[in-house]
Image (cartoon, rainbow, N blue to C red; front, side, top):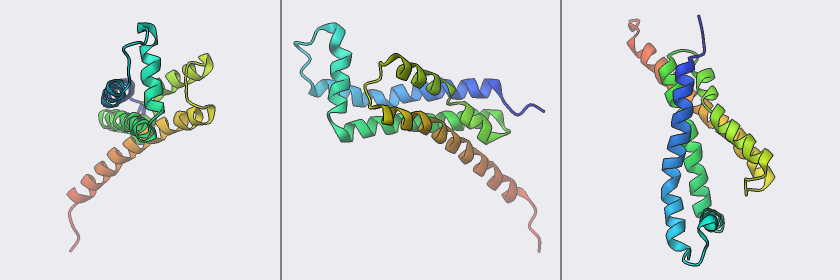
Length: 151
């Protein structure tokens, strides 16, 4: 019996990336509304918004937590869809995040300090694993609740 659900992992990976972007978007819009972008050349608007987010620690932490929440959701989707080996399928759903993270680190395009890049690279699979663990825990509780009670 196959333990890995390829479709589940792919769906979880897409949910991870898309939800991270959608959940982080309000923070980027807030930072853009606070930054004076009128004199910024169009090619540098993205960098100016990133600098505005990084310059506001609570805003930056909130945005990072949305990315981790996206990884958690991706793990939940992968594990829920797989209906087996929830932890494995959950953690595997973070593969797109890991690929993008490694690419950003290798290309030098990530503006975060290297130590933070490594922590975030490890945090994505950890949160995806937690998503798989939540699904597994929920399934185990449902199974034990449906067993006949001994008298």
